[in-house]
Image 1 (cartoon, rainbow, N blue to C red):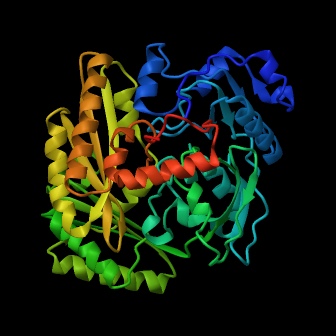
Image 2 (spheres, one colour):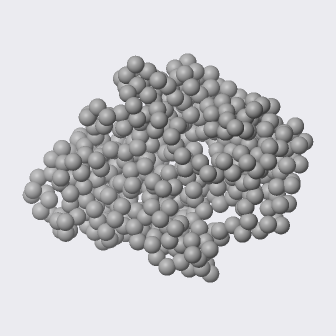
Image 3 (cartoon, rainbow, N blue to C red):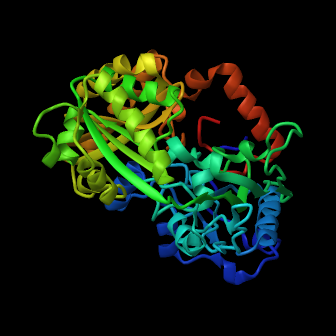
Amino acid sequence: MPNHVITNIPDSVLADLSVDPAFLIREPAEIRAMSADSSVRSKKAEAHDRPLAQAVMVARPTTTAEVSQILAWATRNGIPVTPRGLGSGVVGSGLPTRGGLILDVAGMDNIGEVDVTNRTVTVGAGARLSDVDDAIAHTGLSIGHYPQSFHLASVGGSIAMRGSGTFSSLHGNMDDRVGDLEVVLPTGEVVTTHSMPRASLGPDLKQLFAGSEGMLGIITQVTLKLVPLPASRRFNSVRYDTFEQALETIRLTLAAGVRPAVVRIYDPVEASAKHAQFAEHEGWLTILVFDGDEQLIATQEQVTLRFAADQGGTVLGPEPAMHWEQRRFNWSWFTDAVDHEGGVAEAIEVSAGWAELPALYERMKAAAGTVMPEFMAHVSHVYDQGAALYAIVRGEFSDDEEALKHYDDVWEAVVTSALDAGAVMGHHHGVGLERAPWMERALGVGGLNLLRTVQRALDPAGIMNPGKAGL
């Protein structure tokens, strides 16, 4: 596939694009802003007036037909296209590294009428997650997806990155919240899936685009599966002496059929940093939230706390969990470090089986400690077979150049240690540029070649978000 950077689109090529000229943005400052994202590298580059990537033009379509026309034109003329939602991505997936066109779907933010009986709503891919939830709250329903980027991310972007939210143990991840998709392929062909409530008609096509990071097409419209707003909510928290005790409690809880809405297990460092008023005694802090019918969740809480007692846990009551809820969208741990010279921070999330998690935590902590002064971690999402481990690394250095060197080194150290331990190297932030160097090791040669085959079949001109995910 072509790997050159397109820095100019001739007028003769633009003349072949039959869309409203008002949708085409050529103002340099706006193109510059749209060519950045929320990743560490992009923020540091912008701070030094040295952008990592620069598109030639931004297109802002408002209909699927316009997206189709733009992609068909780009395929005919070999123009790279980088899809963009609301720019909240943190691994560089939204950077136009080959120049060309940014296709901004933020204007496709319509929110349809809620089907209360079937619990669905159809929305534009550019709709902000929090805006959708606010718009449908009067029906007593919710999208059930609450990532830290809830007020920042678009619906389509969350699907394209295969995101996860804090209530995933009850409601699943973003790919579980998707009922059906409308997608425009790189050739301009429009595909609409039909799979609700379930279908056995070959592979589930919508899952082809969940996690595709804009490399296989552009999601334009989404039918979301909704969940009821909880009739009741219960909070609790438990402190343990060891990671193993906390993990075993949750493993047994899930095996018993209990599904807490939220489970988070903080290591002693992060427990002290984020919940200092509840960390009088050092230990591993588990945050628990239960949603649903009051009688049901009271029983679920009782069962969970029985397992906690069996594992030697000390029940701390609802206050730590309520404190977590009040601050769950706060990511000042990142902005406070990255937004000044020499400061750097990153979250590297991986997943592994229950039996592997304790050793994985120690390996990642040791690896990160060789290049970055601060390390803390928590279990962020739990499953029957294991959990996600969310590691936060931070440091203060003499300048941004040194900070970025350590940033590169900590990615290498942490991801390699996770792969050496047999873990999955990415849970919900995606691949983009940051995880691309390890994709062959993570998927195997056969797996990566299969992805390349799919990509070539759908995108024969190689225009869609090129240079990402190791493809």
